[in-house]
Amino acid sequence: MDAGESTTAALHGLGAAVKLVADLAELVQAIFTALPPSKPWQRRLLQQLAEADRLVQVLRLTVAMDRAQVEVAAAAGQLAAVLRAADRYVAVGRADLGTKAAVRLATDLAQRIVVAVSVAGSAKA
Image 1 (cartoon, rainbow, N blue to C red):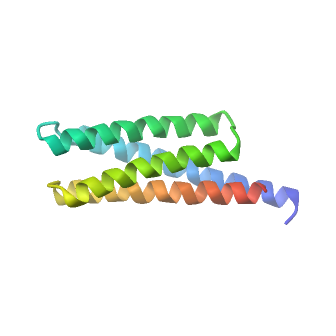
Image 2: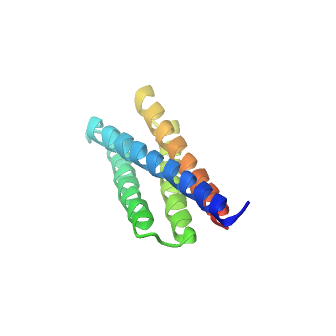
């Protein structure tokens, strides 16, 4: 693979990650809006979703500022870790099936972002 092909592959991988980040941001906001803070588990999940939303913004800025691949991967990894923790929390808690499914989907999207970022990074190398 020559330099032109690797750059094209990296941009394609990063483009996929950007689309996934937009989808994830919308999903996190939808869950955040739909979930009332009336019960302790809901308040805890809302805290985790607020942290995930903050990390989505960090990831977006990291990509927009064209930071090093290591920084983009670290931001994506932190986002995925927060959503994995939220997923574990709702999986064993009293959350309804819709909330559990939405958080699971968010976790899966975050993991796909990590993979897309790593593919983009390996294509640049």
